[in-house]
Length: 387
Ligand code: PLP
Image (cartoon, rainbow, N blue to C red; front, top):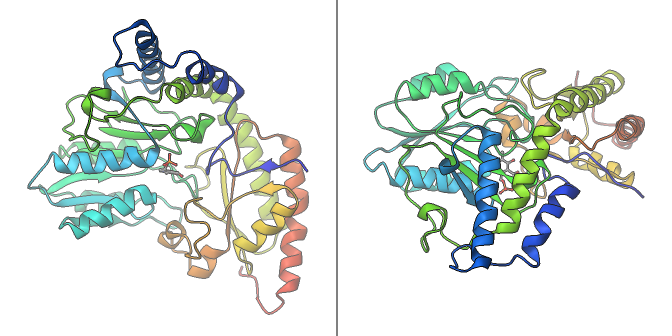
């Protein structure tokens, strides 16, 4: 049976062109860029070339880009690196809907004595800007606001966030792991100080991340060792994956229009049909301020996990929310922050498309989903669907 993959916020299929760009560095070009000989020079040139292309894609300087192992590592490096470089300041701010690779670092920092403010979001998942402004003090060392949410796709009002935070001279981290390749990002126009991303979320390989660090930002390295990545992230570079990420950026640029129009059209078709034909279904997330590929819907009366199992039997891969949280029974912290009850949060299913998603796949999913919901509701007749 062929899989219909609608879980692209968890990870994406690697583009064939990306694999092709990586293969030479997994075979004949195996030099270490720190070596003085020609093999080393070849590897060094590949990294330089990739850095040039990725920084052009993000509209930043090459010297502002550091390669890491994952998006998680980029967030850890940004938060811990900035806090260690600003001793004396003990207050940090983030939103309640950040990814665990931000929230869990904040929890650790709280145990180490930092005061943490977690900002509310409204029913549509948009952060409370008044609360952000009120929270900033002379003591604030860092603000971390995600560019786009992994569960709902909701976009943060980044321009306003930048204006509020930069007016106070406070460093701003944007977790853009879900946004890169799906939303326009121009770091020459948007004055974010640190921005994290991850190759596998936009058809690059898994196990490669990046961190943009704006010139002048104070940061202490977390990984100590050699002088790779300007000493900010020691360790022999993953040249093949870096080259693959550059190719993935290039492809994302080429297909950007397709994502904003065709992928969005398919997402909207899916969502509007599903909401119309399935009683008691409800969208989670702002209708417009959203990534073009993401649809998060709660189906009244049924747990998301039961729906996923039956979808999987039909070859359709979706998710209950963040991939990292599935497997755990905990309802989504994102949906709870958006005012959903625990039961409502457990009823959510996330469908995330990619540029490879076809109309046939969406039509098939739209045919299969309503009877699955009906069957589950008939199996559980005591549960009354919500309005
Ligand atoms: N931040 C967000 C918003 C994510 O969605 C993810 C992954 O799901 C990460 C960070 C972590 O990225 P990685 O899987 O590369 O560690």
